Length: 310
Image 1 (tube, rainbow, N blue to C red):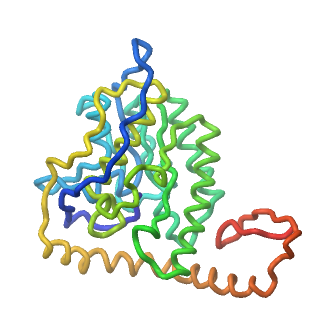
Image 2: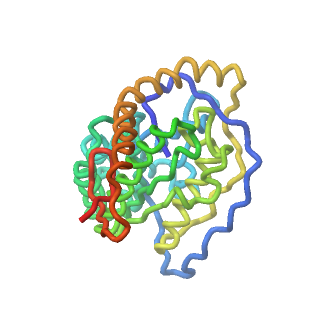
């Protein structure tokens, strides 16, 4: 749930939401066979950093500390190597070595949405980088936990062509995640299926990063998935917002003008030409639609997975 490159100099917060109903955590195996999680690592982009969930004093909290507390991981046994703006290649080349040095039992990897906004988006390269990351974590004895992404157009309103362009990218990214997760028997949290994921109260003022409540929903999803795999969850992640910093409406507006709009302009320059191509090709395809009885196959094209006659 992240899209970023936003400076950490100003940290807006979201008022405590009235939370929608969320089902109880699924049952996990009981008894001595549960494996304790003693060491935890978090890798990824600004969502992994915790943007949208500020603490008093200017720090970010986010998913990592919430997961660590639920799993009973001591503060000195938790490491977060993430940084804003990170892409899948960054995680592999920059963040992974430090995470491996920490020798985690569980490693949470939240990355990929930044790649969907770039003109050099390449599913083959993403597959190679994510595969190398999860493989290295597995070889080091860690359980990797990664994300399958949601339809962000339902949260952040975009013009039709832009939304379709981004949705095609997210679909391709999810195909990459599915492939690599199956290859390494990793844990995958499907953000599209997280209860409350599309409630706007789960999102910060920028509609790009989770609010405190959104981070809590994501942390709950992570610990539920880890628990199902036989790891001990000491206590469920609370969905009651507490301990975060508060910001005024003036702070929110100042952030949007000073940070949010410039960021959208920078990223839009990468995605808008691609979206325009989607629109043009869509119009052209109307004139050469296949006959109903012609079989279809899905083929990767620069603008996403598309049906092609075979």
